[in-house]
Image 1: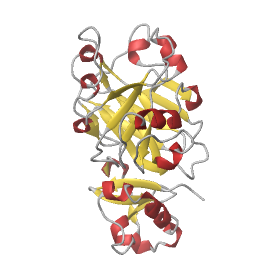
Image 2: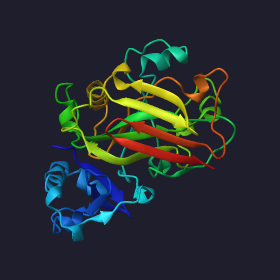
Image 3: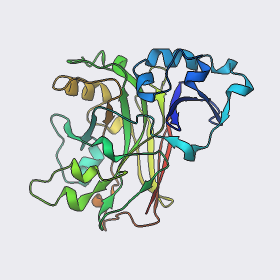
Length: 285
């Protein structure tokens, strides 16, 4: 069985067909049983996945041609956006950090959310790219165990944690949240892929290209803390809610870690691809 792919088109919940050529409007296809609001659908994730199983029976009149440029952020109004820093062994080495004993967590603000193929407004001379695997919470709670963590995940998607390094390191000690929350700096998508049926979820290939040049390339098994570890850690401190977004860290190859450093320039196109999850394509202006 193929994994369900949940997206947002013109602000409405959508399911993407396996061919990626078409989508259906969830509210219309379900006869009104499921809502058009993406956040409400994430809160009813198991029902969305059940509906996805019926996609092969969709009539031609139910299918709408998919234009990836029209896709909206699939999680438009999360309560919380968490991000984990220094969570890949090779990235820790390139930034001259030791391996953390616990997840290093900061937040990104929802006002920075962007479309999967949105524009990035560069500010200053030190804006950086950071490809990331993103987990979307489907069932909230507190004190979730590592063993139960995957059952609290709706799905996975591709993320870009764009960073204003000058703002991030403007003071000592540095602060992360504001430097990573400028307009459009939180790109997510292009859709959410159901985690329960994604057999490759434990080790996914991830690649980031800047204007065609490969800058980051890894397998996610280089993570220090895996998704169940992160969810258990976070939920032991904060209550998690359906629709919460968790950026799980970036691999080596970021602009700030290179010699010479390579920051984003006007006209750069940042393409971030994760195996079985799709591609983000963001243009720097």
